[in-house]
Amino acid sequence: MAKIAATDIYLIANMKIGQDFTLTERSLTGILTRTMSTAIKYMLRNAIDRAYAAAKRSGVGFYFAYVPQEFSATARGPFDPDYMRPLFEAGYAKGASQQPFFREPPDLSIPPRKAAR
Image (tube, rainbow, N blue to C red):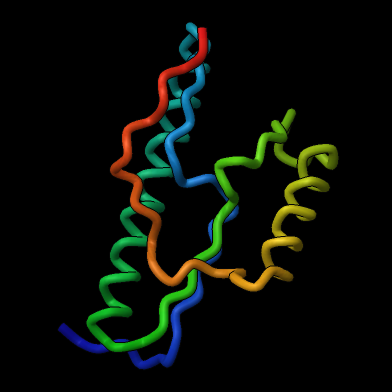
């Protein structure tokens, strides 16, 4: 395999990449929305793993940032300022911290916790 002609790889995902338990609305639109959301998340995870493997193979740095699982604001639409403001603040705080990037992908093999009843 060819090596990457770079010194570092930076990936920023504007979404949570961990498992999120939510109930799916029992409608065609709800099921399709959840299906697409899940597919996009797993495609992103695959791309992250492939980029990390390429970085390791090429001996280049790997830097990765994403929306933390603890982030709890909910968007009411595509451009919801009440969602975007706290999302920006969370990203800004992470960027200003001592560790703004992860150096390897998170281990997502841990099973999710059961939902509270």
